[in-house]
Image (cartoon, rainbow, N blue to C red; front, top):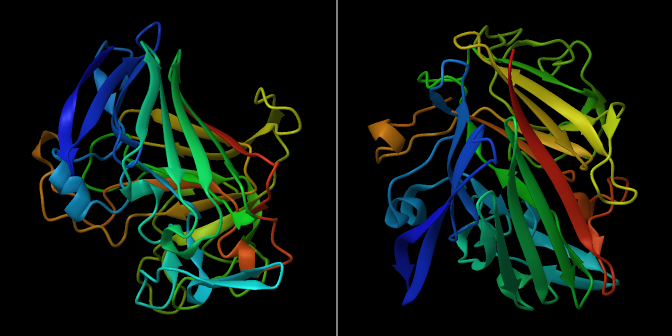
Length: 349
């Protein structure tokens, strides 16, 4: 375990903490800005370490160019239509940071704020953040905690909690871009998602409100297959930025009462046979193939990240749930706790 200064914002130090699992099967670097996983490496059978996430080299690069790379997205991850919602007959207007029409990842949200380093040891980091009433237009003062734990043989466990002194929507998500073999894109990786349904969107990626079967659509990942899929009309590859309705039929204990972990997805590389399994307490999984990535500065090892350089597997509630009464509830009221656990488990395929 080590800790060093990664930069400074308005006179406040930004730390980088490097941790390892007890048996060194996995190691990570975390920075306090955005609660970002800057680097994540998994031990391979030959004794080498495989980097499995995209990361940047300086705080200024993150502030100016990062598309939520490795961050905790919130206060509400994903999209809120028209940057507006109502709770208890009160209407709230939010920061609109998607085409000046919608709110994405909470506006200037949790992934772009300096978290406080509350605790750390050789294999875990605890970060806290206070979001004041009115932050980006949201009601209530929210206290959030993010705990990253590394477990052997190769597990990144993300524990997220939050509470509020006024009714407010909360939907947090870890937003790493995964690449399991270091190739330029993940388009030859294979993916399966434990979902029979998804939530279709309009051209702004706002859910229409429908819950549709994946059967017969490019969104059918019930079998493990390559991410590239040709459009039936144009033949061009389909790009993915879509929420899947998780089946939640393979369950394990999460350590939180009434919140079991469910298997959500498997992601693998044929180059090194590395497999990532995602287990989560959440109802939805946003799959984004990084199709819009075009980072103008070098990332880790000097790599330039272009379209498809990494895949996001964002465990969360459904997008725009606050405006869709038939979607799972996203409102946290005083006295209630928001809790999420997601585990990213790496094994040889």
